[in-house]
Image 1 (tube, rainbow, N blue to C red):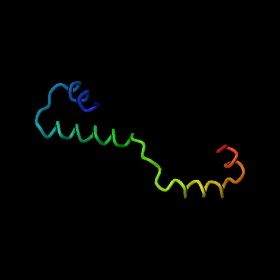
Image 2: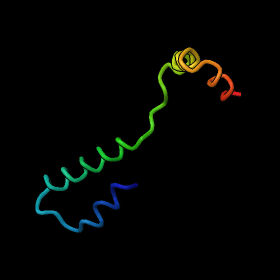
Image 3: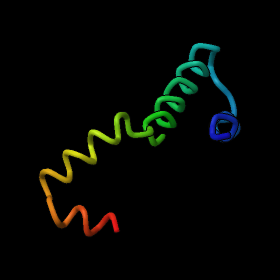
Length: 61
């Protein structure tokens, strides 16, 4: 996992709070990169079909 790599490359910390802050920042970066599943995908597809019409239906196959 990325957290262990971050701790190992840093080496040492002046106090526990510094380590906790670094872990918090690392978690924030990891969570920002995660891909979330589309919520209510059916509704989104209907909107795309309305907006893009034939281009959307052809692209879907």
